[in-house]
Length: 115
Image (cartoon, rainbow, N blue to C red):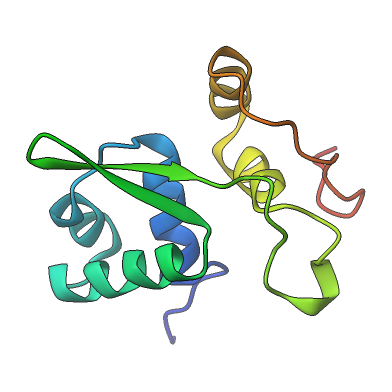
């Protein structure tokens, strides 16, 4: 049986960053079972596309997800990346969003809401 995933490594890396804005590339790589070089490339892609802002905090990087930006897929452009992160990361992320005063995102599409 072949191995596959619903989420790309880019999406999974974004979830790692959403869970810990100070996550190390080493930890992203380990979580995704990829090399650190590949994790660096993925984070660079997300940063270049504007989905993640990166800043230095001492010797560590700190990431901030731009949750209000639309998904890159043409079919779902009316939904923001934060909608997907809220759906996948669950209630912990939603409560964190409220406490950090992040901009609200549009409601999740009816086809993706849990029953």
